[in-house]
Image (cartoon, rainbow, N blue to C red; front, side, top):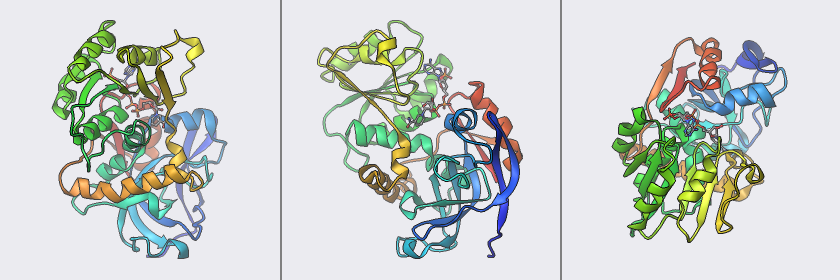
Length: 344
Ligand SMILES: NC(=O)c1ccc[n+]([C@@H]2O[C@H](COP(=O)([O-])OP(=O)(O)OC[C@H]3O[C@@H](n4cnc5c(N)ncnc54)[C@H](OP(=O)(O)O)[C@@H]3O)[C@@H](O)[C@H]2O)c1
């Protein structure tokens, strides 16, 4: 297959606005592969980058699935061949202004993609290889150091996954279930049955002022709550999560930097860790990069064994051109318990 010199990409045209333009393909360094994008998934970070981070001309988009069309000399021998179907994520436009998922071709390190099983649709692969599940992996296994799906908990271990209907929360529930953890979570009542079906044991409304107390009491049967992931990290949620931990304290991973000085402080024995997924994209962050590589070596097997599947998907029409309207759904907070995906 011949690779063109230019392609179509959703690029930032001014702060807060993106449009499809023709531009040069991203350069493929010798340690990377080039992928022809077949499907993408969307995340809140995509519109946040368009509105607050990227300069005009920058590519956009994080989650992709597609077919390898080129392999750099130093990326050879890492388990991939031209023609293989793979999935992964990037930080659209921020690391390399020409690299992003919302375009026809994207580059990636071979260590940070995984083989898409032939029966898995590209849209599902884009969601499964994307920002949301990768964040859940980092939070649960790198930061909270909880038992993994391949070495599940042998003793009852409770975890609070606050805001479980977020995309990160849904994947975190799936992973925590595979890890043998006992799960408490929160969401709007319309999403409670879904979260129970995924394996959450206790599901409450995050608007219930008694939720932290009910979670603390529920966890007592398992020796008390010490681990939590705050999947929203906004509007005072971290304070609520911290107060659900028992008197022994514990660790709360947040997904946004939380300014404790603006909130009621939590007890000194509650440690908060702000998760930053993008650390995994930089080889210099060896531990983070290697941990994501190790996860990518496992995910295909979990999918093929029927243990891991995508969260609910909403299929968006219109290819690259349609993505601006899909991004607006996230911008306006209209996405609930699902992930928008699109074919490219
Ligand atoms: N730092 C990192 O590494 C990292 C990585 C990934 C994501 N993030 C950030 O994490 C956040 C979540 O991302 P996402 O893709 O999972 O989000 P998402 O799927 O777009 O979140 C939508 C969900 O948010 C829930 N929600 C809205 N307000 C809430 C509140 N006050 N309390 C609890 N839940 C609430 C809604 O629940 P209901 O419909 O049930 O009400 C809805 O299901 C975003 O801010 C994102 O930018 C950070």
